[in-house]
Image (cartoon, rainbow over all chains, first blue to last red):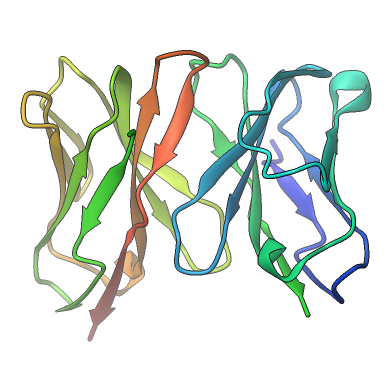
Length: 113
Length: 113
């Protein structure tokens, strides 16, 4: 069974540009989470989908970040326009139920120059 | 404030030696505590999970302990191997609303031959 996959693995963009990150959860997992780790800091929660609905988006830093999960399958996280402080590693995780173990993807390393 | 603190930040040991990593948390209420291993360029992978009523859990050469009274946990690695080189992250599930993972910054372990 395939694990959580993320694309791209790396992205380098200039300040002001737009980037879209994609996450494909484990098949059958209704719960999908986005996390971020900025340099030298701990991983922090961004938001949580249950199927296509946003259950909790309290961790989203500002309105430059937009997450979608149309159809309740894969999810995208768009950053527009990107700022220098958005650089970091963005992780996606999925679980069957919210109380089950979350399985993490390998992350997307975003560098904003 | 819900926080997870880990020590040491980094650790170097020789192959075959044992080591113990520490985690202190102030998360309340919490439902469980997990230790994750994160290899470079990969997502975190769960090693152990303990609820507040458990005080020890083993997974091969990894043994985690939990003292819910003092809000401390430790991860003991026995007979270390080169493949144990990774970051070890303590994660506490905050159960005060939607179950939310609160991450420590991790301990970076290097095992040298």
